[in-house]
Image (cartoon, rainbow, N blue to C red; front, top):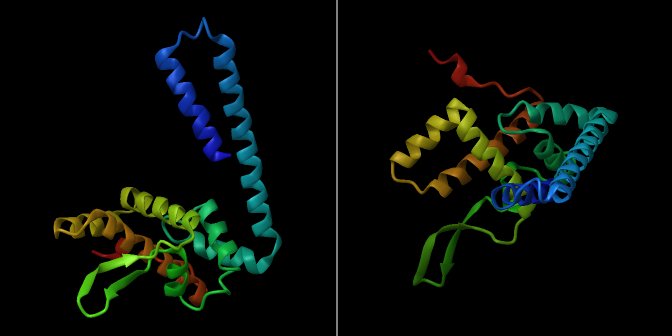
Length: 192
């Protein structure tokens, strides 16, 4: 539904650039109605997702802990719960990172061909995209991650590589808070 809404918004934006609203009133109103309806449906689905997390105490506890990590919002938090079966299908965050496709692997072919580390293309692309969005959000809104990102880029690291490191940091933090059963504490706020 979010993709559909984005499509309607993009089409409406194109219409405003290339069409006259008065001459195509019905088309404009139709696009706007579709966007409003999709917004309502998205809100209903999000409310239902929150309701499902509240029904089971074990799921609710894990969800609340995961949400304490910067970058974890409703959709990513619920997705992590679903794909990890409430964090019971994977023993470590590294296993889950491998499943998601953000764990780097050495590439070797015999003894003569060696390349830099690469991530697997056989991944859960939906979850990988959600983690990418979380990483970008952290780079923008989290001072700790922004400083880390800028420092690594200044050192000459590839921006996508640093983004992948941040994805892994987010995932490792989520698994850490779940394992410890304590909320995430931002230690940067305590630094003098």
